[in-house]
Every structure is written in C-alpha cells, then in structure tokens.
Length: 408
Image 1 (cartoon, one colour):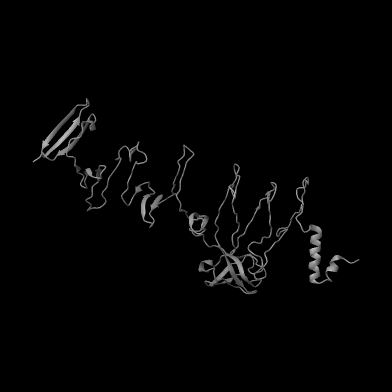
Image 2 (image 1 turned 120 degrees about the horizontal axis):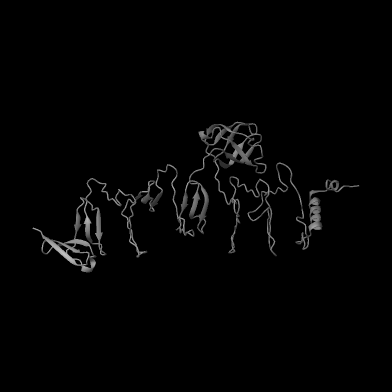
C-alpha cells in the first residue's frame, strides 16, 4: 500500500502545488458554498477546544509581499441578518486582545457610513464601561542584540541613567529578524553606556534586529493623549483627554437634565493651592480666575451685563457674614488716583463717583423728576448756575420737600 504522504514525498514542488489545488477544488469547489444550510441546528461547524497554557488554534501571519488591502480573515455579512464576529466571553481573561506593537499602524480601524453608531456598548447596572489606563514604560521598534552578548542598542530609546535597574522586555517576534529570545525573560538594564547603548543583566539568547521591546519605569507625560478628536482633515486637533489634563478646542455646551444638581462643578484637590478655574486669551494671558479660596480675580476690567436677562439686575451681591461687609473696594496701589466707583449713563458719561480718597462726588446739576424719587428717599445735587448745594426728598406721605445751602 502506498500512503498519500509517501507519494507527496516523491513528487516535485510543481506537482505538489497541482495536487493541493486539486484537493482544494474537490473539497471546497471553485465557487462560494454554504457551509451551514438552513435548518442546520449545530452550534458550530468546527467545535474545537484549546487547553494549553500558551499558543493559538490558528496563527495567521502577514508575509513580506502582503499589501495594505490584504487581511488574514475576511468576513462579509452580505445577506440576511447574520452577524460577523461573536465572542461569548465567560472566563476571567480577555475576550478580545489587540497588541499594537511599536512601529505598528492602527490597532483597530472602524469606518462608518450609516447613521447607526460605528461602535455601541450596552451597559447594564453595575457594568464597568470603558477604562482608559496609561501605563508606565515605553515601547520601541529598533532594538539590536547579538547572541551571547549583553550589549543592547537602540537608536530611538534615548537611554538615561534613570533606566538602570528597570526591566527591558521583548514584546514580540518579527519573522526571522527578531526571534523570541533576543531579550531573555526577566532581563533588566545593568548599565547605560550612552543614549543608544545599554548593558543587559542577561546575555541575548538570539541575535536580532528591529526588536520590539519595552523599557520599564518610564513615566507617562502629562500631555500624552488618552482620547483625541480631530477635524475632517485628520491633522487638526479639536480636543483631547490627556493624561494630565483635559484639552478641548471646540465650543462646549453643558446642558443639565438634573434639576437638583449643578450643571457644572469644578472641585479642587485636597490641599489645592493653584486656581480652581483659569480663563486665558489666545496668547495664554490670564483674563479671569477663581482662586482655591473661592476668590474671583480678574486682571483686567470686567464687564457684567444683563443684556440677555433684562428682568434681573446685572449684578447682585448677597452677604451672609453678619459682621462683615457685603462688598469691599480696595485700592492696592499706594499712589493710585483712580476712582473706587463710577456711575455712568447710557452715553458712558460719569454722573456720580466715589474717588480714591473716599469722597462721594456727583455731577448732577438739576433736580430729579418728582417721579424719580420714591417715598422716604433723599437725594442731592449741585445747582451750578446759582452755586448752591440742593437737597430733594420725599416723605412717607409722598410729599416732595427740598432745601439748599448757598456756597461761597
């Protein structure tokens, strides 16, 4: 009896290719076929189990001639309502794990054309949602080792004295150029020779170039993006959540649907000393701030207007400290001569003021209309033509009374 494997061992590579093509055609045919027809109640056509500590059932790799439009697996949901990929995750490990190694392109790419969301998560009560967690350490793609040597080089890692004692780990293999073992497990950096060369605690088990590796301990910078939004051109940043702060560059609208909760809250850290709120202009010059004490500061003149809410005063001050003033005006410059308060009419003309010395001044030179004075109210004005100080009042009965003092 001649076994099939024995036969294949005696034929040429061209014949083997022909046999392979014939077998594939015999099993699968040369046109699309239905592998699970209607009425087939099986849960899976191929029901396989993996029970080892490492490895995979399928290991699909891109070859050196693969193009940008080639994929290891293609799924098309052309007809019916069948889905594309279903993972029923049950154990304590991960359901889908994408490792975007140093030098790689996009880890996951979703293109949306329909009005339906390109990505949706249904989160039931108690579900964890999305967690974005930056990690210490940094990855690089250009490590070089020589088998039996503890010398390791990288043009991009920029090694510093702070890397001594840190772990250095190989992240993956890349074909024959950087096999597993180029950096042995549990290796650390023993010494830094220069910014591109270090000494490893263990000699390399294999020679490699283009090694993908990670240096432990590298801190996450405050400006590292965690989530970014770009304009349609793909280069203009619209906003980002960075590791150290929130950097949003488009107009923001906060609409509350909780009537008993503040629409926007800014809370300082324990022991906060920096401002809780800071508003800058385009040159990063501070225009307005709220100090950690709650004091509101404006380096420039501030305008409060009720143009959009004319049924209320432009400003109200409410005091709750029984023995303290509701408001104070402080001249912080010893040589300052500016007024404490100025009152202007609609033409921006000063009608009354309190000067830097605390004197109350008025520029009113005529009596007010009787209707402008309410009961139990008094005002004064300067009769410039007759050089008299005049007082106009209305008593509780609504009777207008007046007096004057001649000025010499």
